[in-house]
Length: 514
Ligand SMILES: Cc1ncc(COP(=O)(O)O)c(C=O)c1O
Image (tube, rainbow, N blue to C red; front, side, top):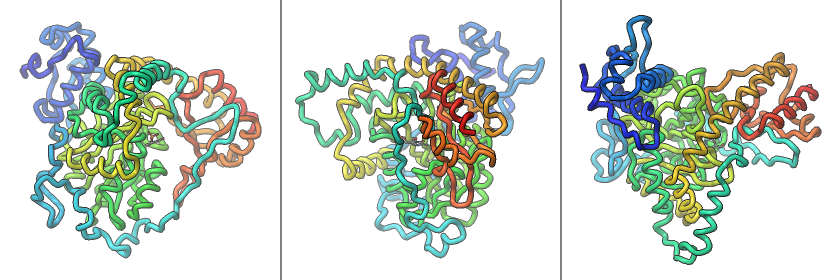
């Protein structure tokens, strides 16, 4: 019997519930190989006795691990660790960002330099001709107009939080205090480019409590929303002609960033379990791939979540093929059937993962505070680049937000809105089934703030959007989600920002337009 009392420590006074702390420790041990695939776990009563907790707590731990696919229940026998999980090591980011094992030619052993350094010296990994078999980059080829929302009574957004529920009053109070007396007149130093020290420190605890991530202050850069992080990471990792793997369909604004940097896109299908990792492996065979852009939770636009098996396989492939992963976990906070899966960045990734998140999703779209977490050397370069774009962010807002993270307001808010958004998701599913069942196809997402609603041919989304606008309802015309070769005739139907009355009205308008 493994010494579970030592392996699964927990703190009853800490913010995450005890069952989550125990489940996360168990996951770390499964990942590290201490608890092996196929291992039979102790019964719930026995483990409860060992840990000194109520049996219901252990039942919640096993439910959580089963929901995430780490363990399997066998009738009348108990639970064992899922057998087909590949082994990966846990870990965070090294100080200098140096990778072990394979490096790029001529770059191994450079002290203190990560794989992104010295971009100027780097040979183009791909010539234009070599890039031609997949989608050649012509600047602006897929450029889409900036979406401007015309005035309308109701808006179906593509998955935004409901600002009316966010603790903006509390945030405003903290912000005002900083503007008026506490520090408002103090000079702001250039060292604040990476974010206010309070915010970066608060993020260390926040990332550990919510995501099981081991990061320190030098691993964290605060940005103006997640989009700025995507841009900076891509700018550091890519040169013209480099190959980037993206999911298809994917988040078109990120795709445009990569195209604008002159990268070649290698588009990989996304199915019900997320990006197709076998296709990633197949398509990257014999090619130099520089980076993979991943949306692990509630992929944009299709809302699917990457399964744990695929997450681990992807890390193995990244190691084999020697590419970096930009993990855009924009929607991590909203999960309704189980807790979210731990990020790839919380596993052993040999400095391959740059992790991105944003409070624009957790709280309100207008709170433009995002974050990037990566190896220290990478963050130094990212900070330098951020300074060229914007000298520093709104450090008072960052301080104010840090206070809300520290005193638990952000955690309480997320707990509250998870319940509300789950209700809204279910309400919208009911409306779609009863009112639009013959024209809309969708799968209920396990979390997030939008439903990927695919309309059939009888309801061309572009026409529908035009008609709806005349009746006071703005919705996307779906064009942004279409790719070079596919018209999805679909929208992301954001449910989080609409209450039930507003949703009823929106669906009523759509029904009458049809
Ligand atoms: C997948 C994805 N990543 C990043 C972003 C950008 O987030 P932010 O508003 O924090 O810049 C969005 C915005 O909708 C998104 O959908």
